[in-house]
Length: 285
Image 1: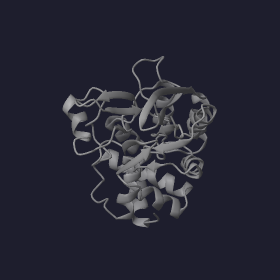
Image 2 (image 1 turned 135 degrees about the horizontal axis):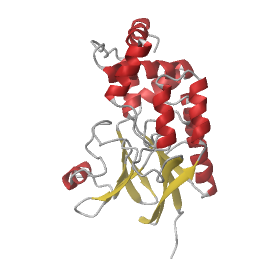
Image 3 (image 1 turned 30 degrees about the vertical axis):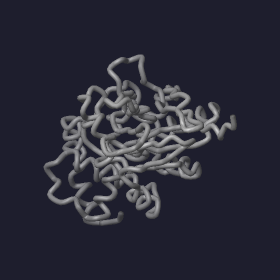
Image 4 (image 1 turned 60 degrees about the horizontal axis):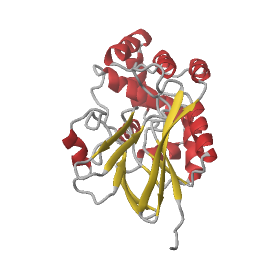
């Protein structure tokens, strides 16, 4: 029987400007023989090196690259949608961290990230994939959290003929099935893995490898690649990254640190509401 080309697709997302982790993941993907790439969004924002992350991925010509909720902030900034944000701690943070990214990205790069689609369908090796960040309709929210109800996962493929789906956003690996037997898979976060099990994904870049050929899935491999999280945390401290202490604690402990309470305290301490207002007024997106 004639066999078509076998594809090994590296599927990754939620890098969040952590180039140390991305570099480790891409090196591992290359060693594992990846032939193609798919990007699940949130490649930038929060971490110290958004530009290096973007510039490492674009030359790989990913088969799909969807919008993350952090890049959606870029879209809102370009469309002047941020108004009356002073009492919203997370909105202030979104503006301040996006302003950091804009200083490191070119205008074309910033706009390119903002223009990514919410959802893409792609066929690889005869297998039909549905690609999105959180759901096909939205790139934010808690609809597809790891322990979400079964009907949530049924719904994301209810109107799709895809054989399986891949998404990001939760920062935790997830493997679920729809009621009709299709897999909905999240490979976890390359740059900001969160976990309550301290030995789990801490200090590891999480991504996955999908093997397909002849219209069938040959396998899925979840990868946990070690990288120097302590060095990444130190770098954030030297690069004047906004909310650096939250970033440092997250990458070194796996604890989700960007709570409204923590963000609001830093906003007050560092007068970041004024910084956000200045960024909006300057309109340098």
